[in-house]
Image (tube, rainbow, N blue to C red):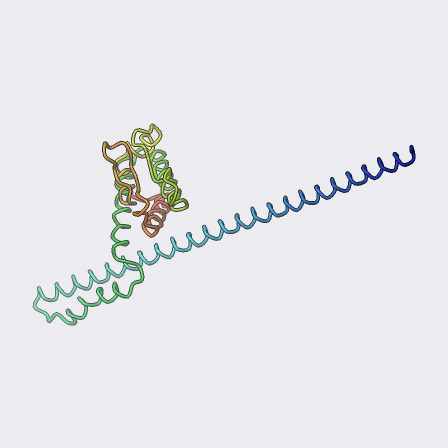
Length: 230
């Protein structure tokens, strides 16, 4: 009976050890799987960020190209007008007038976005000029605006990122009290609610192209030391 009892205890101990080993293996598999998922999620975020940066740079280059074309077209028109004023024949006047329209129609970026980008850029320039003696505060305002825009772009379904309390002390200090701060957010789609308590961006009015353009303008303002001063 003693021998039998000992055998039973040994079997129970062995069985328990095997179950613990099996459980440890399962836990290790779970940790490995979680690690793989985290790595994959991080890789996906990095890839999305890289794509957004490429789109920002591409859009910025396209806007610069269109601006140069408009300047060249304006110079040509001025030249033609001077020829007319001095009595010379206006050579290729009609052809030159039609050229910008053709280029705009072929452009894959909508004209509306370009116009809004220019308004955003001018808004940021105005903010910089009005507070040119406080560079640190201007930079903080640009960084805060970039955070607001980035949060909405990354989480368009989260209402907390699309709603800003106007009386929030941090918001007032960094953005709300600066000329052009609220105007820039309004260009991004934010609207003042009834009672002027919040700035709110409705979900159906979230425009990723506008947000990407806003982020591009803010990054340009942060990296260019002469932005708004020339």
